[in-house]
Length: 294
Image (cartoon, rainbow, N blue to C red; front, side, top):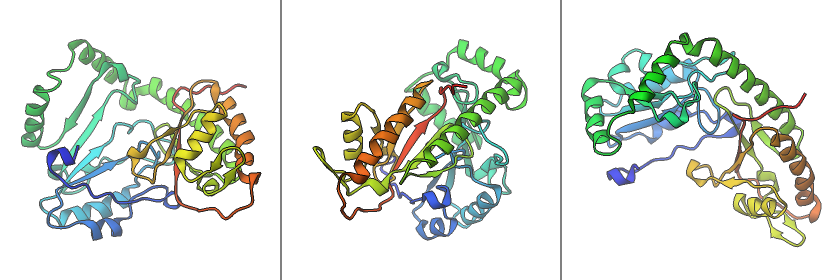
């Protein structure tokens, strides 16, 4: 999308050891007089990281030094967050309201993905310009969706008891999955503070040779090997993290997924004794619709 707008995207890497949080010093080194838009996502899809207020304040001070730089803040997961983490809206920081476009909606916290309703908040002239573009693409939001959104907002702050109950269930699923994946040899994990994803590092298996398959050269070949064994994992290069893996786990099938991984990963590990690469490649587990058996 940036290139379609004749812009040059500059990808700033984040790391699992730092919970995929942006290094503000690295950000400062990447910004130039040509920089126009900084995109932030907190809570983050796909890493589940949540930016603490102190880090956001450090970023805001850097933004203040670049008068032509705007911040695009994706905060659609703001109500799906796990204590002690807290959400801070970037526009609420001193001097950042006029520099920030906040994007939010009803799809995540209120489970209204099919209603196709979101919104942008920011300085009036920017929002008006966005409206001109939207009117030529999606036209207006459905009146039925807008009525449903009003009902959702009427549940109370942060969705009231309905959303807090859902988030409590998400946390239980997150804890179950984090503990389960930590038991798998060679798998690194960053515990998410928000949203409903896990980002997993399987890089210790790359470079190994599997009898009857060949070398696990990276995330794509690992996905092919697992698919051959009946476990589907999606390669999601769009996240710009060295071809990460995406694992969609729904309902009670999470237990089956873990059983398969416990069986298949040792096959890779012990199939042949060779030197293997340790590049950061990650996988995602989506636990929104997962059910945990008692």
